[in-house]
Length: 112
Length: 113
Image 1 (cartoon, rainbow over the protein chains, first blue to last red):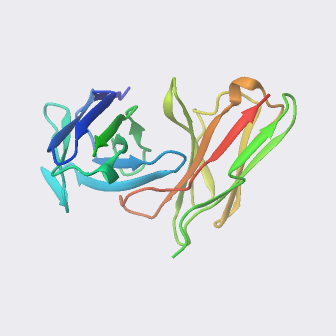
Image 2 (cartoon, rainbow over the protein chains, first blue to last red; image 1 turned 180 degrees about the vertical axis):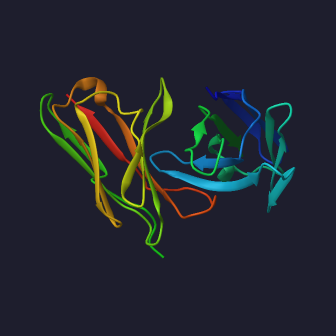
């Protein structure tokens, strides 16, 4: 059974810092991996999707990498801003027809 | 462009009452997912549909929970009778064919007293 772990559970950094969020999964036979952002009282917003054949995806200040063989992904946020404060969730799926399995998220606070 | 729409946003009711949560997926999306989120267990899949047909309901906690998708633009999740341990945020999400991202609604915050 696939399990997704995110470390740390919470992180607080000063504005302007570059930071890395970690995600690991137990079964490396994944189809794709997604990073989501969740603001308090809101649903999840998809940030980046990496197919299993890809090594990384970039969107603005965000860069997500995937190392399937070691069961790891990282989300890199450059020049963090207070508006980046949210919970970030990682999720994987093992095939085109199976649903996502989510980690419990990392709660990020960027202090001005 | 409308996203996934859930109603109600908040529901407070007494134990034993029937609760119905509603979801309108994004038009043209073939997959619809119902999730429950709690502090202890995180985000858990309850059930998902493909082309209005339930594919996997193994995450539905017990017979008190039921879900339907009578057409491509509407789904319900029903709890009868409700219990305090059902208190959580319930999310609906939809996705098109292929493996694009899932799109989530803003959730229903359910409190059972």
